[in-house]
Length: 515
Image 1 (tube, rainbow, N blue to C red):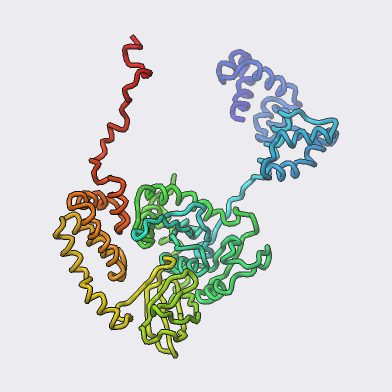
Image 2 (image 1 turned 45 degrees about the vertical axis):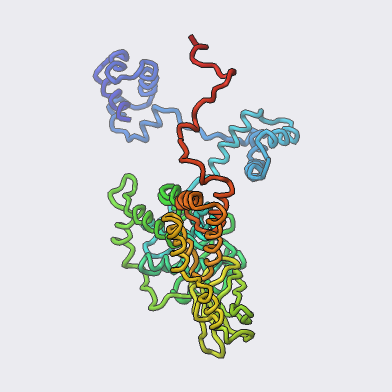
């Protein structure tokens, strides 16, 4: 409108249309058009100068006429079918071409395929409109599982263990927490939520999650039913539980966005690192979380951490004196090998042999296993998740079993002395084998097997095999046996350049062919 007002002033001063076009930097046709409309108005140029922008626009510009499809039966038919088309496109195998072919069979007066696709795209944009939400500090925490898992390598078995990752965020400050879990069961989820609140240093007023089966037993838009364990957790921390609508991820868009960022700032930096257990993995995640929360927002002068400390942390509820722990209780019978079996993951835990045949009470959570007999605790173990494995305390064994190992001379010092007599590499590898199990006696058979390989293959080959095996992360008898059986101990270090040399062959043309 500034140019229109300048045009009026120049017309008042008697400038020609050519001079006005040059002065304003506008081509002559629009200058001529605007001047004609101004002169045809029922007002003088001096009066027009005092008009508002809106009134001037009504004189100079042609009013925008909204498209009316009232008389266009074809467009009305298409608009009526648009919600159906957009819904069908989400189904597996449904394409725009298929929908168009069905559409033209049903309607004689139909659009062509190109226009059909254009109108579909315009209609989908209208349905994808988003709204900016304003969050209250300290009011809510959003929780979701990342779609991809992280992993660590079990050094005892060499197995890659994949772990689900739970991501939590305070949507006001975008302050984020993430943690890898053994599995996605409700005890592990509650353990992660406890760690999250400890990380935040307080409790928000509410928690919003999707309708994951670990949390919601019955989904409902108005009154979802949560699992009893999570309801007890919420009562302990005085936090309100909320669930999103079914298949509506935008209801928790803040955590959805943080999951995407977690792939870039947690998953990607750790993609080439190998971890020995879940504690190492979570330690690395916490380190990356610190960098992520301290990184400045784009186009802003503050970070998530700064905004959290400045505006949100003081509004969180204080943490209870004790954290919430889900404890389970089962009955078990002590077997002849003085172990009980925890059926949840089929791991075996030892008890004093005097209780063989007795029925005991097992109380356990995500970290601790306690075993009681007649209300007195007889064993305490750290929780392990390796299936069909044993956790054994030496004092729980009968005296004869302990003496059996002593009579055989099977002690760590015995095996290390035998290995040292063969060579330094064998000694180092034997030491790693002895450390591979929490109960050392369970590694004695593996050590005996390695010493037997010395008699079969000799000192030089066993030394070479152990040297090669020490570069890996799995230490057991089978690794050394496989190296010797495949003669890998006799292979020198691999030259990477040799892997990419072109072999000599009459069909391979050399530089002479391109003279």
